[in-house]
Structure formats: structure tokens, C-alpha cells
Length: 552
Image 1 (cartoon, rainbow, N blue to C red):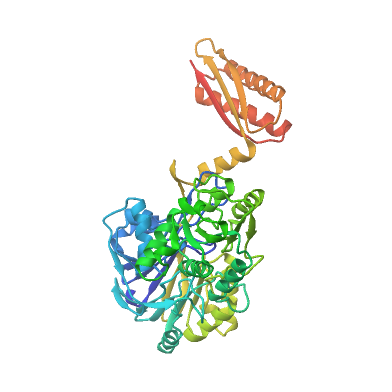
Image 2 (cartoon, helix red, strand yellow):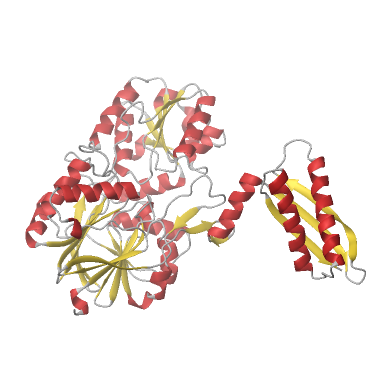
């Protein structure tokens, strides 16, 4: 089969987790990358700031990569661009808002010399070996796109993140007519968002959130309202602002990304807030609580975000208290539940009223539920299907949905990160695997692999025991006494434990020295084995052992 008759798809992230979305389409020897996202760490990933896709496979083929194409501006689709583009410097395509968000992050990281190419809705661009069509879709950030890669085999449709909102804030709807036309022309492969594939029915319209917010505000005319949401959720910010202005409140923005994104969205005409309705956060004390609405970042409990600082009482501009109501206009991303819960607890300690989506419908997802996914499949009628973007169970549910609509199971594949598939006239098949593990970023230590992360988990869970000693090389005896100290292991008086470890290590070293061992590395291992055996057998504990025996 000729190379031109085969398209290979390599999944580098986003299949089996929420975030790190990234895949590569390979056709006629060239590669186009779709999205380059990140994921935020879980509580037990100590010291980790970000989690990225493993880009080694792309870096090794950088001379064949033609571009990165972005579906929309969320960080789980754009947040790792700065790391990819440092090694694979290629043009980046996306809508004006998507590229604006990406540029802001890249400028912060001082990554320069890059080429950004803005595209319009319905525009078609020759990108590498593909004719790429940008179809408008509704999501929780404006200017999102589905991508259509036109090939000799037929169209390959990447849904991006989407929902079928028939009453969007900006009247920009998912282009159902064009999707139906593509179905008539022939869709060879569909790659579609699976985030809400477990959920029956249809996702509520974003406009429904405005109704809920209006009621919440009207019931609290004397209280200061603090609303936390994603800084990229321009439509949510618009609704919050509209409700506040209608009540005669001034709007204060809090959080660097909130301020930057609002500025960009206003410049692009995607957000409409009059300058007279905005006040600096430092000046809100001049107003009565009922005259102010604060829109801030931190709805996911990020430790350094504005809401977390407020909850801890660390923010320099004001403190929340009994006259404040905090609205969390979001739903916790899987893995962030603990962080969000901690922020809510801290807010309650301050006497603040907290409203989240469990109490009021102050959030609507940007992802399609089963009813919308069925509509999407009915319009496109793909010959082959791979669910993407979601945890494994989400993709399994999406695959079953497609099969339940009549698609032959032989033409449906549930993939995971690292999987490769080939599309040909005969269908799709698995064709290999590439490295696609988590790539950890620590702001102080740089890149991490799993080993130091596992050591940090062990330190946090089991504590550490430090052991040192000195040995006289010629006399073959301990010349500097065995010293033992512990951290984060025993509560209270651990003198007896330390004494027991010290005696056990000294006896093991004396025996090794009598047998003629003089190498410091070998003696250190003797001491480590003796201490480890004692701690495991007698105390049923496995702390991290750091041992240094010096031969002098």
C-alpha cells in the first residue's frame, strides 16, 4: 500500500486522564500536531507544578513536523506549548483568542521567535500535507474549533472540546449544517471528546448560568459578591459582569491571568465591560459590600491563585468575612476535589457564605453529554472512530455509544497514551506504541522522572532515617561513632529506637570490618541493610534510609 494511502495517528496525551491533550497526524512523511496541553498535579505529587506529555517522539522527528494546530485556548490543550516549541520550533495555528492566550503564557516564559498564524471560522488552510478546515463549535471558551483534515482517504474530523449549545452567549453555535455536509462527503475517521460520555441527556446551556447567578445576586443585595471561575471562561465572566452591572455593582478583577484574559477578550471584542464599571481591587474598600462584585481566579483550589489567598487571609487588598458571599462558578476537575474542599473549609472558617454547583446551578459544563454525542455521530456518520479526551471509562462509554448507533466494533478502537493507529481504505488498526508517560515539571528542580517523585512520596509517608559513621582504613575499626537521626517518622521520644538502630548498625559494621571489608560503598550498604532489616522486622516501618560510611 502506498504511503499516501495511510494516515498514522500517534496519541501522546489526553487518553486516560483529564488534560495533557496532544496527538500527531502523520501523512506522506509529514507530521502535524494537534494541541499541546498540560495537567495539574495530584496532592501526592510533592513539589510537582505541572505534568506534560512526553515529547521525545516528536523531538526525534522534529525535521518532519510542520505545525501545531490548536483547537481552543484552555491550558489542558495549550499549556505545554512553551516546552514543545523550545525543541520543535514550528508555526502555531489557531483562532485569535486561542493564540492570544498562548502568546501570553509564552511571553511569561520568555519564549520568543515563534510564528503564530490566526485563522477564522470556516477557513481552510494548507498545513503540511493536509487541507485543514476550522469549524466553529461551542465550548466554555470562545472561538473553539473542530478540525477537519482532508485527505485522499476522506475527512479526518477532530471534534476538539465541544457541546451543542443552542443558546450560546455570543450566538456562535456549533456548525451542524457543515457537519452534516461532511457526513455526506464521507468521514474516514472521527476523533471525538469523551469527557461527558457517561452523562445522559444534554449539557445545559451556558446562558442558564446567568439565570442562576442573577437569582443568587438578587437574594443578597447587601453582601459583597466574590465569584471565582476560569480566567479563560470569557462567556462566564460576561454573565457575571452583566448581573453585577444590572445591580449597580462595580467590578473588580483579581488574579494575573484574569486581568490579562479580560484585557485580551475586550480588545478582541469578545467581552463587553465598560471601563466605568471596573475598579481596581485595591480600591474596593471605598465601597459598601453591596456595591462590589469581585471576579477572581482559583475556582480549582490552586494554592497560589487569588481565591486561595483570600481563603487563607493572605491577600493584600482585602479579607473575606461574614459580609461576603463566595460563588464557585465551576466544577472541580478530577483530582482537584481535595484542593477545592480545603479552600471551601478555609472560607467557612472566615465566616464566609460559600455557594457552589452542588447548591445552585452556577456552572454548566462545556462538554457534550450522550444526547449531543449521538447527534454529532449521526451527522458525521464516520467509518471509523477513536474516542479521545477523557479518563478510560469515559472513552469506553463513548465507544459503546458509537457501537450502539450501528458502527461496526471492528472500526472502533479505545486507545491510551502512547498508542499508534493507522487509517487506510480497509479501516483502522493498531500499529505500535511510543513513549508517552507523564513528564513532571518542578519549578525549582526542573524536569523530573518517576524516581525522585517516588522518593518524595516515600519521604512524606514514611519519613527518613539518617545514618553516618567513620572507619579507620588501616586499623579496620570504627573511628567516628555511628550517628542516627530521624525526621518525620516517630512521634514523641524516639531515643530508644535511635539507640536500637545505632547498636544494630555498629554490630553489622564491626562484623564486616573483621571480614576485611574496607570499601566505603560496601560498608554503607552493610549499614543500610542492617538498619532496614531491623526497622522492617521489628517496627514494621520502611522509612527512607540515607547512609554514609566514610573510610578515612
